[in-house]
Amino acid sequence: MRPNMAERLAFNLKTLMERGDINQLELAKATGVKQPTIHHLLKEHTNRPRLQTIIKLANYFHIDVDELLYHEVDDTSNLRMNWKGTRIPLMHSTKAGL
Image (cartoon, rainbow, N blue to C red; front, top):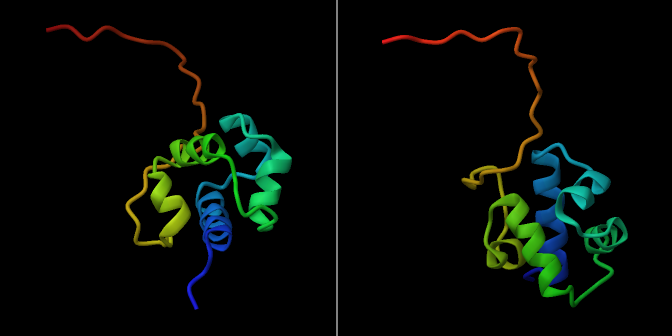
């Protein structure tokens, strides 16, 4: 049996969050989607999420809304993610001359 939209969305969101090493609160801050809304999506408690919510999440993970809702995201997917970076302090700079 094929998963419904809520099941596919929850699976994809969990997968993307794990791959991006991001938790619900961090995702909420990064997207502007409230943390309780993300929790409800992950627990499949909503069958009709708002389009704006889905667009914000898809944009964050650089995927189409269609991919997020209807296609399984797996390890072979070619996704660009907003990975958390480590800041490295710059001690000094030099000019390169020609």
